[in-house]
Length: 132
Image 1 (tube, rainbow, N blue to C red):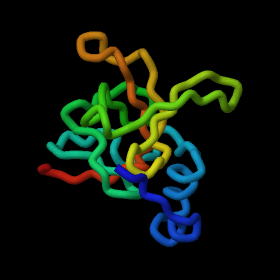
Image 2: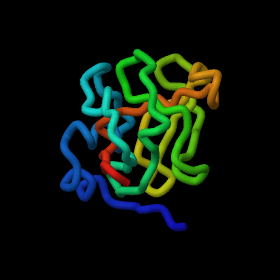
Image 3: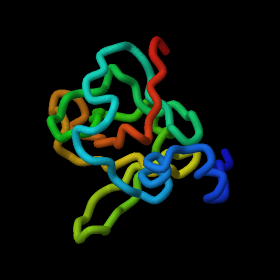
Image 4: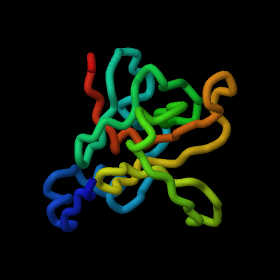
């Protein structure tokens, strides 16, 4: 499947300034500032840039870190992971596999009873679709 590619000006017209900063420029929203901290409704979280389905609310948990956390993506082809050495740290960046939007990072400190992973995702990179 071909990646969705747009010029920066096209993304800027489509997204809010904060969505653009985080999703297209690899920024991070402030912890505990996002919309999806404690949503308990059934549904799917989609990429704010391309509307691709990424995470299921059923696999969301409260990690206490200030960002929505999931123990797995919706499917193996939903996201891609890349090594990230910025800010003097070694982390694994998570991007949308359809448009390369920056979503957040994955860490090996998630619930041990499931995957043991914590996908720490910026809420401004997501749109929640209830009842999907």
